[in-house]
Image (cartoon, rainbow, N blue to C red; front, side, top):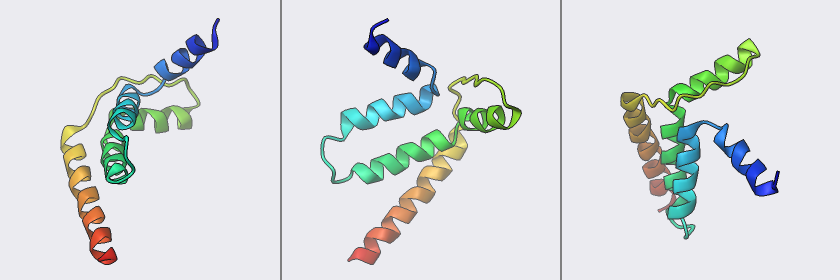
Length: 95
């Protein structure tokens, strides 16, 4: 099996929302300025998924991961609001 196929198989086994966010971050962030804010917002979206809970539970139960790609939208919006507030506070401290 070619190396590229092995890499693709490894990525395909990861949490679908996290992979989607990583691809989006890579494609959209050609400049460093503003990239951190996007990364934090995307992380918040990944953090508010059923896949995060699945990862924790699978680890604790010592079983294979079963990602479903389900997002808790209401939690995600709250996380993004919180992260945006933290980013603004950090910006205010710099000025």
